[in-house]
Image (cartoon, rainbow, N blue to C red; front, side):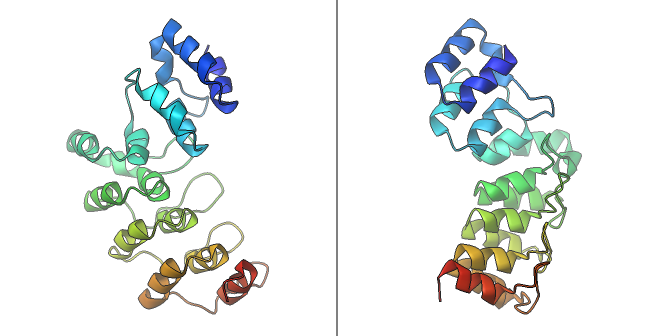
Amino acid sequence: MRDQVFKAIDVADEAALKALLDQDPSLAESRSNDGLSVVLFTLYIARPELTKILLSYEPELDLFDLAALGGVGQISVMLATNDKAVHEFSGDGFTALHVASYFGQADVAKLLLDNGADIDKIAMNGSDLSALQSAVASCHSDVVKVLLEFNPDLNVRMLGGFTPLMSASALGDQEIIDLLIAKGADQNLKADDGRTAADFTKLSGNI
């Protein structure tokens, strides 16, 4: 049944998903073999209508679900009883700070950092992503501003040797580019393929 839930979500079959959940509401708490919840899965694939369906069955949400959804109050309660949760990794190798940063939850990111989350912790999935890179990748300047208050490594490199500035330049996000440069990001670093941030800016067509 769990696999059927993931399949219904993967093909965006709302009717099939509802039928499965009506039969067994607990399936709204299903997880993949690596521990990824169905709620977070719908968020990753940008299917808010499916997220809404799952949430209507009132599943128990974990820290990573709440980080993506913006559950500041619930996270505060969690951290009050388990302050080490900010250091844990999700099934797909991200911390709650990575997740909050990627999904644009600035308030959650600040809460996690205020409670000891490591600003420079790297994802454990081969991507070598930091929270800053997660925020840049999804163009969330409000989150970037929060992260910059906690002095992250501005020149941290993800897989391929790309820095946050290179990513912002490739995306043509001028606001984030300006924020990173103002904070002191190195504009002359080269990725593994030899390209600099300026080269990515040219590639994006924003020159």
